Image 1 (spheres, rainbow, N blue to C red):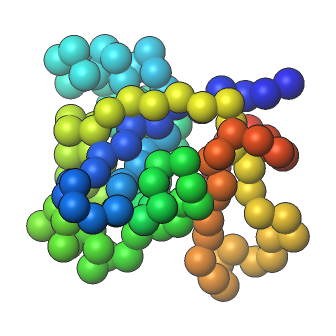
Image 2 (image 1 turned 60 degrees about the horizontal axis):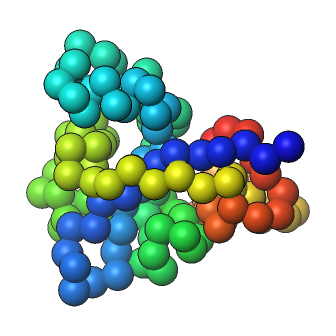
Image 3 (image 1 turned 135 degrees about the horizontal axis):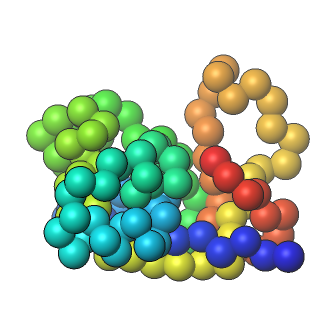
Amino acid sequence: MVNHISRVVYKPDHEKPDEFIVIINPPEYKKWKEGDKSIPLAEVLDSFEIFHSNQGSQGILGRPSKQQLDTYFGTNDDTKVITTILQKGREHSSDGIRAGSGATNLARGSFSIDNKGRGNVVGGI
């Protein structure tokens, strides 16, 4: 069974390949986007994580550095960055995501996700 995943993709500079992505819960995001700001971001998001890709939103996703967040958003405060992505980004859906095989201790290195929608589907992040 394939799990569907929804995300909001924000491309701050159309001349550069960098995109910032957050994984969302579509019903809560729709209400939030329509103006119901009483919904906590923790309910709007599937995971309180910001992802980055310089290969397009269908490629390998990693976590952005604080410097990247400062450069594109003027802050590295996750809440402010996520709010900007949700406000200015576009919603996309796909058939799922897959994680790299043989993951070791994720705390020791960079973490990436392949969200092309094929292969081993991961239910959550």
